[in-house]
Amino acid sequence: MHIEPSDSDLAFDASGPLPTVLLRHDVPDGSQHIDWMIARDPAGTGNLITFRLDQRVDALRSGQTLEIERIADHRSRYLTYQGPISGSRGVVTQLRRGEVKRVGRSGGEPQGAEPQVAQPGGAEWELLVTWFGGETDRPAAGSDDFTQHLRLKHRFLQQWSVFFSTIDRAVSHNHPSK
Image (tube, rainbow, N blue to C red; front, side, top):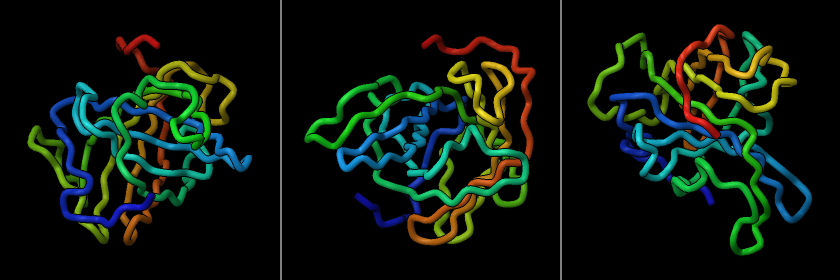
């Protein structure tokens, strides 16, 4: 299901790190894709901003860009859920969990505590995404935990792109357990 964009489509509370998850969605027709979900609030209680990807964002190499599609928000239960999806829509498997911090928007505006909105057509966010645990054989991951510096840019309608610039493997802070 696709959504029509609006000015408040990607509003979120930037007062703290936002939970995020990558899920592999195996569809009954035999195809699969990746769903990248980002909570709208630090507690992860509201609906999740959701993108459909052809490949894993945590596997991007420096300088790579990935075109992604904004799809309908998903329920917050997907931050921890794995298994069959109701209505015979397939199975989801958690690939990696983490947290997102917004460090800039459209020209380096500093992060604020008030809710932020990505405006349609050209909005750009700079994000630090810290991935916890997960698979250690991913091309971008040399250790269990690492942080990516990503730029998320709105192209048009539901189409976005994500650009990966740097990685920091020396992540040393407490994170949620699986």
